[in-house]
Image 1 (tube, rainbow, N blue to C red):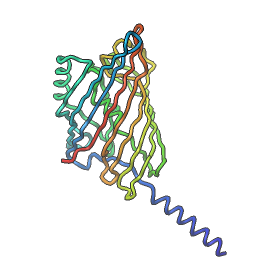
Image 2 (cartoon, rainbow, N blue to C red):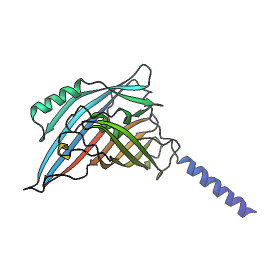
Image 3 (cartoon, one colour):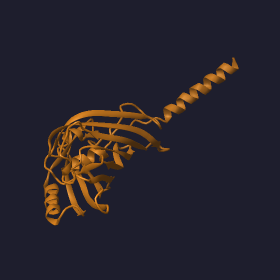
Image 4 (spheres, rainbow, N blue to C red):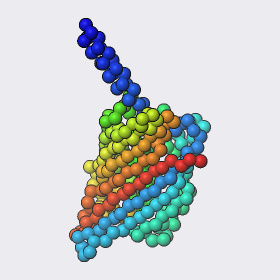
Length: 263
């Protein structure tokens, strides 16, 4: 009898301890009127196969400011302090991109307080390589519906009609998330993910240096403030499949870091 009682106590304690280690991951950008993030982006286009390999790099920094709409169903977004340094583009292209991005109005839809980026992606303006919606789509993770513990995984798979310079492209987006760490106070959670963008559509590969890449794979990482429901910091790395133009081979890689800025 004593053995059964002791075993019951141990099982109950084990279940209670496991429950205490779970956290509900939820973003709530409707809880605050104004948001500001710093974005640091870097890309490299490596040309090889004909003569010595050459590398063309681009670095972009900016602040992303967001204001909650009156209806609290979206974040109205602007880009400030936009700065570009690039080996790929001349000063006129950089100036045009800076003016276009800095003067544009963007919006992130909110569903239960969580930003939804995918249905906003529109790359049809042909802005060289960089688009704010595409960057945020790869930096903002999707949250699971149930409480999670360390090691928990979940995935998201969606097929979207992507507006691009090549016309409307059906883009398959797959993401696999994992809880890497839960803080001792359970006030922050670190997650990682793998993602892939693919399309069966065929397009002219010679345009790869002119527009935002629409296919490739990468990885991401984010720290979530689960008490207040926002992303503290997120980062991602992305690489396109090798493109071949005549005898040349082109490798395109991107890295970006999004970090919350206190007012």
